[in-house]
Length: 116
Image (cartoon, rainbow, N blue to C red):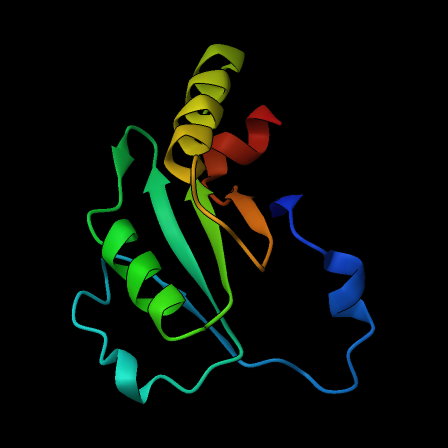
């Protein structure tokens, strides 16, 4: 489940062809950005209590090459207080950045899905 927080999703629905994009995180520490052929990237900003250690460099490299960027934050929240803390952490990570694609709250963990 993903909750869209920002981005022009209506414009995306009007496209004539599918877009090719990548989910990029700490799991891809050595991206050869000069070879990336994508319409967009969605970059992991963080998860639970930590910031993805490659968020900043992935963001900067994609922007430098003109690749439209979105972001996501993987939630582990099981209480309202933790959900608020994670949302604040995510907002702080996004501050000062420009996104052409949506940003998402990624809710996959069994314990989090039952919470919502």
